[in-house]
Amino acid sequence: MKVQVCIIGGGPSGLMLSQLLHLQGIDTIILEKSSRDYVLSRIRAGVLEHGFAELMREAQCGERMDREGEIHHGFCIAHDGKLDRVDLHKYSGGNSVMVYGQTELTRDLYEARDKLGGKVVHNAADVTPHDIASDKPYVTYRVGDEVIRVDCDYIIGADGFHGVSRKSIPHDKLKEFERVYPFGWLGVLSRTKPVSPELIYAKHQRGFALCSLRSQVLSRYYVQVPLTDKVEDWSDDAFWEELKRRLPAEIAQKLITGP
Image (tube, rainbow, N blue to C red; front, side):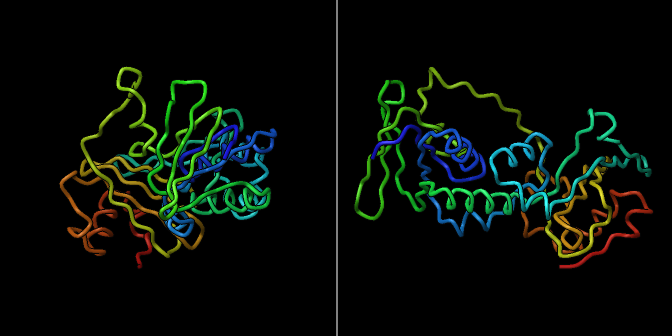
């Protein structure tokens, strides 16, 4: 098989790049190690920056996002028991953020690739880049007992920090820029009405907290926890009580808890 660009990784980055290149007449193939159902079951971020929302429209994938997503023109910062709002629209030249789940965004990108006949291979095992420093790189992958070779002009690694692409770069060429934070996150997706119509970032002596949302009936909450904590260490009640402690009293009283 011969294509101009072979993309490793079928998440939002790989799908978006494939879509944009296709619209410019550039032939691509995406190799994804997991099934489509698995990719679409992952819960990830739910807020799109202004620039990425524009990119979705440029990629002809933004119709449902514009119909179902929520545009936020600001956010709130909770500190010292009070709440301050930052007018994002006012202070960023008219920009905003779009509340739209990454799972839905990925679904839209998959449908766009299907519509244009894009080549996306799922359950691609043993994906391996070869001769990446040459003018004729290629990638091999396995489906069952069959090993398939993809010759290309460029290989794009969109498979994340733990993917095969990063591991394929020679150590003398690889540069990593990393900041490791000494704490963890505990996140909950709750089928409840959000406590606030806009995001709340909370600073508290017990740790940071975030009140986010996916829609008006689906909330996303986080609390900062020690790196040693595990999900099993936290009951539902313990999570809700800790979140309330880190929010101003007027907000905590309005918090609706649930599954």
